[in-house]
Amino acid sequence: MGAQLWGFPMKQFVLTTLNGLTLGALYFLVASGFTLVFGLMRNVNLAHGALYLLGAYVGWTVADRTEYWLLGVAAGFAATALLGLLFQVLIFRRMEGQDLRQTMVTIGISIVLADLMLWFWGGETYQFTPPEAIDGSLALPLTPNWRYPTYRIALLVAAAAIGVGLWLFLNRTRVGMMIRAGVDDRAMLAASGINVQRVFAVTFMVGAGLAGFAGVVGGTALSIAPGEDVRYLLASLIVVIVGGLGSISGAAVGALIIGLAEQYGLAYSPTYGAVYTFLILVAALALRPQGLMGRRA
Amino acid sequence: MTIALPETTLAAPALRTPADAALHGRIAKYAVLGLALLAYPLAASDFWIVQIGAQTLFMGTIALSLMWLGGYGGMVSLAQLTFAGVAGYMVALFGVSNHPELSLGWPWWAAVPVALLIATAFATVTGMLAARTEGIYTIMITLAIAVAFSLFCRQNYAIFNGFAGFAGLHPPRLFGLDLRAPLPFYYLCLAFAACAYAGVVYVQRSTFGLALQAVRDNPRRMRAIGFNVYAHRVAAYAMSGLLAAIGGLLLVWFNGRISPDSIDAGPTINVLVMAVLGGMVHPIGPYVGALAFILLQNFAVDLIDPERFNLVIGIAFLAIVLASPDGLVGLWRRLMRRRS
Image (cartoon, rainbow over the protein chains, first blue to last red):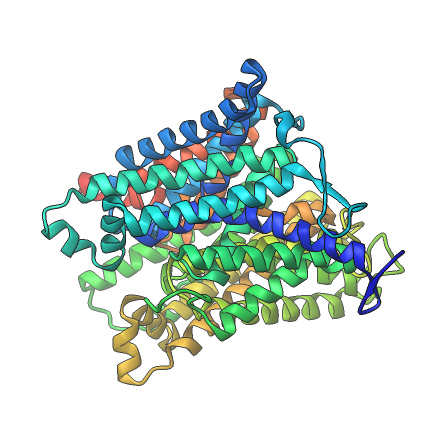
């Protein structure tokens, strides 16, 4: 058994922690797009889970045909980004300010998308093969005989990179500056001569694209099957409620908390795994309704 | 149906004012509708009585609980089917099921009130959480609660019997009458639906109902006047919980079983689809929506591949949300207005 920590085998603890971090990284990728769109447009995109699954399927098909995994990732991102752009331009632009109606529309879209995907890709489970460089497993530092899948480590690194990238995009670029200004005061941004509709379109594109990207990346770590859309939608919801809607750093903190809680729950008390997540949600709502990093509306 | 009771007492003066005429018109409409619903089984086959008739009545009651919260309280909750599911699980746990080691085996007259009470309490606690938020946040939190409850039931074998849930749940025999038979079950559903409908119509006009609608329209002003906005919202959740629990009771008696996948995200969304299809502007809306939904569900097979039912319903839902936000009832009202 080896080393122990508070009576638990050390190896299981370390591996569970790593699994929790990986899952948290995946949740962050999904939830960051969700929270980005909400922060600017007050649009709760309940089709976000469907976009995740669509990205995964498109990515799988492209990777399967071309045998380039990276091409699949790009295709997953591009397909959902394009779809997101279409949604924003064709539908949501026409019902600005009607939050509830927009949300209903996203529910309708997710029902339709889920069924279309079931139609095209069927009910079976798909699995990606990641490129050789990040396939296989890696020895953990300090403990050379414990190994961990390289791909998951890569996922952690990628999520961290995306997080930093998003931060740079929002804080260091002109478009990012416009988005942040739009979050604070939409009317003022429009009044200073900026085409708000274009900013909205770009944001929705990036948000939807991130969902598709997460679909390919997450689908590679786990697998793709019908029903995953609801799972990741739920994860995004809980992550952003805990972390604070509209905040990227909140999404990161929330994703880590939920990912770790889920994996520890699974490892140490499998019966009540779902309950821990829920208890965190309740505690967050009761103590800090605006979320850990959120600002009061 | 005796829904118009509170009004008939008001209609004492013999003079026929326009308001009187409108009232009489409404009484006549309810009388016709009530008679039609009572007489319906005479003209219908068992399939139409139970699959279409009874199912519309109890699914409509669950959707009505959402209409009550959404239409009068301004809170769109996706946890209504969860309240119904809690009632169903409690009937299984306290009453008789196919798992005697988990069920307490109480007689129906003890198990049913306890189940309704627990479901109402669950709705109240959900309301205490959800009413801390507003608008789209409420949707997110109630959806999270709904899916989390279904996941919990799926993973928990000690109480909720996990994936399989419970079967063998039947309505009681009353005075030698088997309520499971098509005709009695239809009238049972009709009676419950009529009570639920009348209850919503009555409470909506009570002081509490009016205050709730004022809270929906302007919470800040109501708070300033001295109303406890939070308490009104939580009370609205409690009432919606009771309505949903009644529907849920009939639902499990109809299916004879309850399992986690009958209350997971898909069916949860279906309740919202029904309420929105019918329109959240009048208590009749959810029943209209439920009827449209169930007709589509049963006859989409003839229109298109049965596997593609969700596509049909999704497109119908999108069309209604985009074209007529107040649903079929709103569409009907506008047609009537144009004709007159």
